[in-house]
Structures are given as structure tokens and as C-alpha cells.
Image (cartoon, rainbow, N blue to C red; front, top):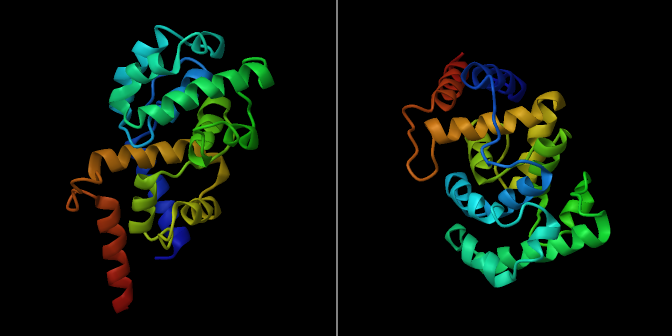
Length: 214
């Protein structure tokens, strides 16, 4: 099975399972999505969704966020982990958005990645889900699955993103990265992989095994 054949098979199977792909992080606009994605670093979406209502009850805009102290933000987001860095980043980026972008989140990869606490993956999520710009955010879970499925060599997330973009149609990127996340959670969680239920891996592996004998 070639990589292209694998890609087609993966897309077809994921579309059957997840025809709709709601964004896992609760938000109401680009700013609240940016904050939620920032908080999700090394934290589950489920936990973030429990914490953001507390934070957003106090501030849903950069102007409101800078009225809170870094310590106040830190106390609220502490369950998400890395609270000293995240609280400082949230407070500082809110100032930058007000001073540089009139309080709006810029729909630009470079501008987003210049904000404190915002890396390429976070910027990609915001660009794809808030602004509808084609992007393929790759986290460790997507990296793990695309490596297992033989789409990439698995050296690092940067290479995985490049390989994925080459194989999957650009029009599918925004939806597909969420479908892969949903699949991983249901069939192949990182901490307790259900190898017998990960049918995409099993199917690809079986077909490759058969083809190697022909």
C-alpha cells in the first residue's frame, strides 16, 4: 500500500466515523479560542473546558484580561499546569493585542507566533478553526498516529506536518486534523493504546503484510 493509498483510506474511514468535527475547546471568538489553546499545552481539553468558564466569567477580551493581575490569572488556571508561564503569557499577549492590533487577534501565522506562549501548533489551530485558513496542526497524538499509519517517518512534528500536507488535500486539512484527534481518543489513546481496536493501523498493517508476500 503506497502512502497515497493509505491517505485515501484514512480519509474515507475517518469521514465515516466523524462526519462533523466540533472544535473540542469551548470558545466564543478568536481571542477565547487563542486562550483555550494556549492553556491546552500539556493539559487535556476536558480540563481546559472546566477552567475556561471561570476565567472567561472575568475576562473575554484583551481589555478585560489586562485588568486582572498575573497572579489572579494564575490562580484560576493552576489546574491546567504550567500556570506561571501561561498566566504571564496570557497577560502579556493581551497587552500586545491591544497595543498592536486594536484588541483583535491577527489572522496571520507570523503575527500569532510572535505572541508569548503561542507556538506554531497553537497558531495553526487558531488560523484553521477561528479564521478558516487551511492549516494542519500537529500535536504529539497526531504525530504518533500518522507515524503508526506510515504517513511519516516519525522523526518530529515538523516533518510530520510537512508529510501530511503533501499527502492530504488542502481542502481537508482543517477537518482532518480534528478527525485524527477524535480517532486517537476513541481507539488509540496515548496512555493505554487499544491496539486491537485501532482498526486503521490493523488494516494498513494487514494489507502491507499481504502485499509483501505477493
